[in-house]
Length: 250
Image 1 (cartoon, one colour):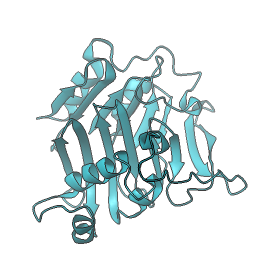
Image 2: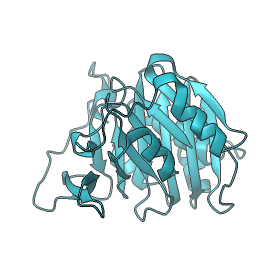
Image 3: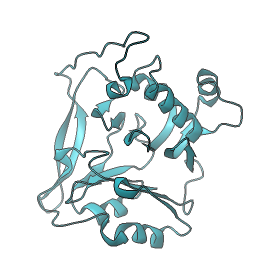
Image 4: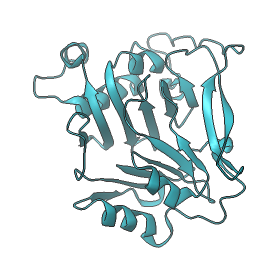
């Protein structure tokens, strides 16, 4: 799977950028998505206009960690992996028996966006299993991205020289679009357009970047770890009927 977002949708962390990457452009002339298509036969691409693109293929997928794609009410979602507590989540979100993992993620996000009772970290923490997902809400121009606590699904992110955020389960694709400005997506974390990168395992702690260095000694993006020393303020829930826009809190 592949997603590229404009910085107006998802601003990539500055620590991902490597000074040794050079002028790498992920969206220019469709080079990256064409490369993805040539290495992943049968791929389908959804053009999000100036906001970016989403592309996926069922080629060479792990049968234990299948890829799924769905669109519900202008919410696009790529999901890879397997959720263990599907039945419980279907009941929690009022979904029918035919709903699969990607539909569950969309409904969980929609509940969160529409001022549901759970904070974002709990929404992701409630998903038990092996997973990575990329969600884009075209109505609010927002991205919601996460990976499980064990990093069970190969998942990488990076930034090109124009600040576009690139995500894929194929590290070679991310290298092609970002040069040295990439890293594995942090396990146990989620990323939102409004709040950036956070840990859903330790929601009250900040995450801090640690520079990655390749075999030649050059900085190659950054990994992110939970900072045990730092604490963020807990965000209070808005009262029922509040005019506050709850989406800005996730």
